[in-house]
Length: 392
Image 1 (cartoon, rainbow, N blue to C red):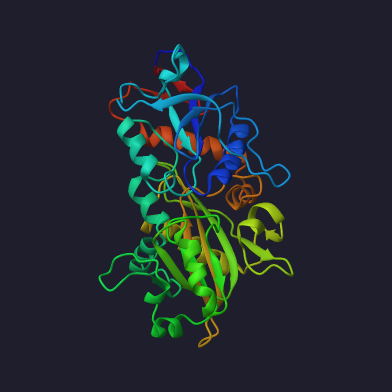
Image 2 (image 1 turned 120 degrees about the vertical axis):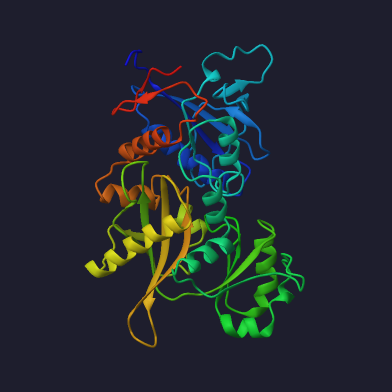
């Protein structure tokens, strides 16, 4: 093998057009800080709320005094659609393209629509660029709560009772009157009204009286026209991380963790997650060995059922079956690009499983390079320390 080792060039993409723009920025700030500058040449790329791609300085990507970060300024860049281009081109007049012409791998730290839903994954596939995380199908299916539930149910993984609001012709219809009395009686109260394709608890309302329902549907529909109404599932909130790399064998499951709401906190909403800090997180969760084994097994099954790649976080409710008294384990959702903020669960459960934050990022980048090098790219080999040999 000939060729001089050089740093792996990683484009970290964040921000975006979804309601989770700010959380994506915070997640990216943590990823940027974890990438060793001796091994990685980092290209921070922020996407504004209106969809413009900007070369960013990678700074001020944290929640400061309750103020959420936002991508607003930077040099305009564009993804090169030709796989031979392998990267980004500067759009501003008079700028020298230079080092932005080639990128080895993309880390799309994007949450929600236009980032975690298969759209940017399709764009990167067309551009011939390796990227961290699941592909087009798994990203789209995991982002849409309706189809996540259908696929997991087909795999024999229990789901909570729910309804997708549709009119008489079957079209998505965010009209609260389409939820008839029979459905209301079946679901009971409380229910959670959610945008089908969103995360971070954005647009979700807990409804304890049907008089609140129309306003809750309107809140969810402002984020996504497809609205899901879920019956409340009593139980402990448990989360488990899944990690896999091409050729490394079956997916690995982390130790599970538990989210416990502090007194006076009603449910795990956006403010509780990211601003108020009104939760306690037990890593690992206080579970029996049998419960841990079952949660890890179902996490791997959910990951495979949705055809995930690289990483995922599987969220559960662990309760008790009222008829048998046995444990009742229900999957709430699967996140293909879980939060990477300093307090996010995914890094915490892997740290407790023996994988530090920098090692976690390293493994994801190396896995993307090893498993997704496009056939049209120059031959390349990734060394154990993350350097790219003989490429470019």
